[in-house]
Length: 105
Image 1: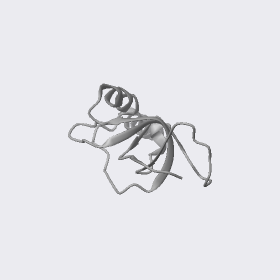
Image 2: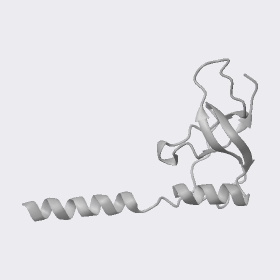
Image 3: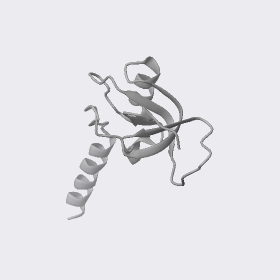
């Protein structure tokens, strides 16, 4: 019994360690973000950050936000670039957000 649990836990660990290399879905922006910068998904900077979190941006040509954090209160002093993006996935560690459109709050 213990060996079956051990083998199962090894497979779960391996599955979690394999990065997801499929392109992220592009949906209408719904999440207000404060990003350090917004660049094209075809840029070297976006590709480098995407590789860190296991994203494949091949074939996408949308603006992406780098080093983003959620804006939850209207009037929040962003100090950088305020954008509305697809809601970033938690596993991206606030490093990147997809399909970011500049907004004025």
